[in-house]
Length: 306
Ligand SMILES: [Ca+2]
Image 1 (tube, protein in one colour):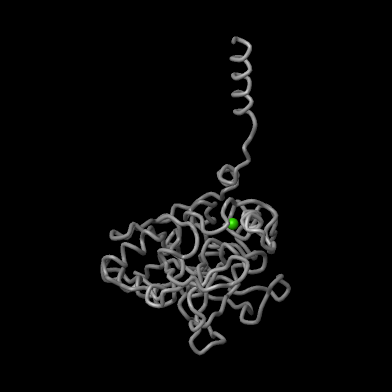
Image 2: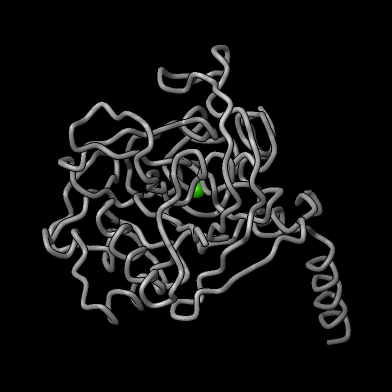
């Protein structure tokens, strides 16, 4: 009995000594950048928190030799006035507060489908932002959002808060995402295993998920961020200005301030949970036609302008 008890004790001690190496622990490691003391404002109706960024000028776009550089990313000096931007993407719970208070029917609800990917793109009929074809809770970013849905929530929040709430312009989004850096991503140039500390992207979780379903692998980061689909907001390290998930998780609508290829087009920024390498860059613009419908990786964050 004593022998068995000792063994159990030894095993318990070993459990404490062996690192689990979980993605969450890796992300909690000491590499997070120091956070400036920017003012915070909380929207009273939804609890969405905004950080006040100082105004400034920066080089928008990317140099010609940046891997993934595309037309439309030509570098130019841009200045922005001070503005507030939400620390996180709008969550499903926050969007639900808006939808219930206003009676708003999202595009995905009206059309009764969301476009998903599970080894190929498919329309999930009967799905909408509440059932976007993946496991989510109210702390995950709302997904399956159209540009129109994001604008509708901004208008409602403007009325309810008495402040001017909007989608960020492309310049505001990129200024916030860069947070004073000039590299492709705020943590630098490299796209290696460190990406999993900073962003929820296509990673080994996606390969595991596809492997379980006996489906073809896809390009993925050489690390495990723990999420094959969306992650709760603020689960990864914030950027140097205290903003979470500027890369990966859901792709974010910005208000049109640049040309798009489509008559009825708008721009998404920051990549999403199925993105990899060159799609996860500060300068990357995803130009989409609204006729293509809403995809399960489309979400947004908001700005306050006064
Ligand atoms: Ca992931």
